[in-house]
Image 1 (cartoon, helix red, strand yellow):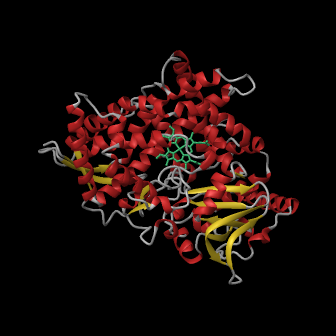
Image 2 (cartoon, rainbow, N blue to C red; image 1 turned 120 degrees about the vertical axis):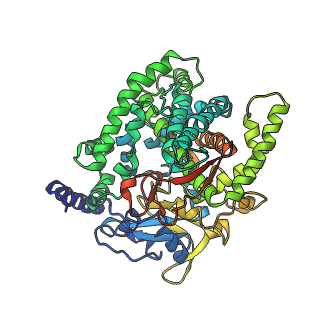
Image 3 (spheres, rainbow, N blue to C red; image 1 turned 60 degrees about the vertical axis):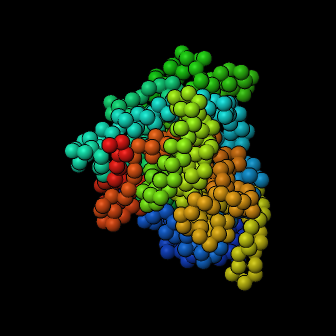
Length: 550
Ligand code: HEM
């Protein structure tokens, strides 16, 4: 039952929404010939399907099968949204159009509430361009290569101090070779240590299991703040599109689970960034960590273009947030796929042995960046890529049209009138839901086996025949275009370094009780794995880990 306050916001939202709708004279009829699913709720429309689905894709995959790469869904109070999974439409929106399709207010406000108003992720147009230019040097290729020794060092630590200890404490103390446990928390600790070191030259000691306030601040953040929001909140958020963002930031003081968590997290991050991280980076200005490089790039800017102090502080929370759980959860899904397909583990292991031999032949102690690229590239790259395709942790993106526009389609869809539609005219303000989960499994892009595991699709020339869309192998997992992931190369390098250390030393298998513990891809931010029917277990990916060194 909604509380009095919640009911009040329900009514207020509906009122403001209707006024906004009338004032802006939104033309909801431009999608009238586009087919789509029936709406199960007057208030919530098909958002009730998407936001409350058991698993990501439960609705989007059947819709794509029925309607093709473009369909219409109903939003709050019957508002029309265009939902897309078509390659050319993605290319047009993300790449060709630059900033013409913008992140709607509600989407940006979430990010501002959590990471602060000055972060790159919620910036738009010229402001975004300025942020990106100043941040780019922190993510250059030479900068990334310099992180490799550190990445290998943390990867070795996951192997020795974490997994090996866990095995000794496990159910088989005699041989200390095999144990089943939730691997996700360890990967999250590892990626937090890595991003803190690479980002800010800071040792937060999350892997050592020492008390880490930063690690605690993140604990459960996605489940508390973005999973299965209350219906009143979905309606309430609709009014955000008609309210200026500075006013919206007061929403963080509302006494609800989501907003309280956003606020507490942001307050903690602001203090931590101001008192711990920024002074550390300012004291080590010749260092190569991302923040020192950013501060130097900022100093070189003209006073008009410089990032203000609050913007620098909010880039710190953005880099920590965007670069830590994202990589840990992608790795978690990747290990799950490898546990299902052990023959691919074996192939990568053989390539690691060959690569190791070359490292010792040339008298080096560890891998170089090019060792990770080739010859390991073959299996490691294709398998990683396939896991990122099937499990895009940012599974849904939102945009709105800043002007009347026409969106082209790679594959025509059949209209309600029976006509073939090759392009979709949209009015200014049209909301567009881009299903990354559906695009990454669209048979028109990936072929009839799009939903299946086949890493070999990334070999040969299949890619060259596709409409060029995503950053990496044409997947949309890192988004695309001007607001795509700035840290994708760093994310991939981190995943490669950790994977090599793990696969060289351990086998990963599905646990003996895998049938009883069905893993679901939950529709919260970053698509965390959870056991169906057991929310009390939190984010959970139990795998059986077997040591190869006995
Ligand atoms: C596997 C790991 C990762 C995935 C799947 C991922 C995915 C994404 C996606 C989909 C976006 C676009 C979000 C949107 O449009 O709303 C994004 C943006 C961003 N990511 Fe990543 N990311 C990953 C790792 C990283 C890492 C390691 C860093 C930093 C070290 C990072 C930093 C950022 C930043 C700063 C943005 C905002 C970029 C902008 O607005 O210009 N990400 N990421």
